[in-house]
Length: 318
Image 1 (cartoon, helix red, strand yellow):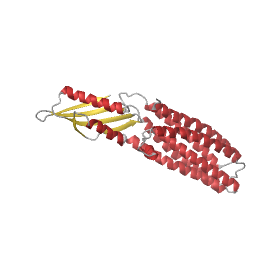
Image 2: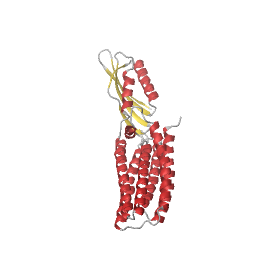
Image 3: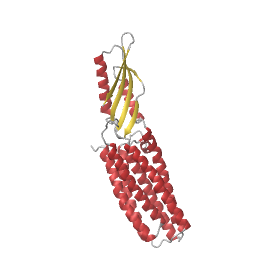
Image 4: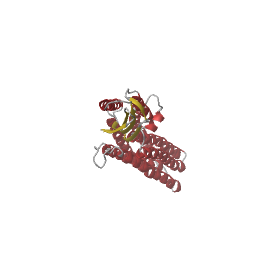
């Protein structure tokens, strides 16, 4: 079975190849046609290419093994770089597109020949569509049947996939807007359509960037595992014959495939030390079998013995 890491890399490499090729083609079309919308689209594709390279850097660095300075590993490197990507998309992609559109409205240039623009936009739509489909398939592969696609996107802990999907969605919308700007501007001989299309592209990028910044901030601060996973972990522990009571499991993502779990469990009275250790090992094995992404389990065990003494045991399961 293909791992999530290989799927993650496939999404990023596909996006890099598509955006680099498209960026070159868009700048050529902008040069020959004089279209502001095409220039904005070229800038958009350059920013997207750089963003995917940053995501690739984040994926590579997030897989570094834990060390003394970072005992929980480097998983959050991916969250950091995805946040940088969102900021770059907002500041560079959106900002330059809006600036170019306003400049074109104030100092219009005539669209000489839209043929190049139409050809490149058609190619761009196909290439971006292929990259978008790759990202969509990866998201759908991780979708829970009980959730909508929007819910899956919102709770995804893998920014390398949902960032590419959102960027490709914005790119497809931008291609449509650019086409309308070029077509209406040339057909009606009105430069306002072309300049306005550039501004609309910038606003689309700003909206997507703000969404990515919002999601990235939550992941970087520290977000719990999927609520369904937390509930299932509670069920696994609560149904064990040695468990008398437990608090709500505490979880935190240190990366898409790196989860920390803290369990505070009260075991049944009169358990021997051996029985207590067997119960802890049994719980850890069940949880890991169900959720391999849980890399570390911290378990505080309490067992009430004869006169009510409490024995505490804290384990770091690596």
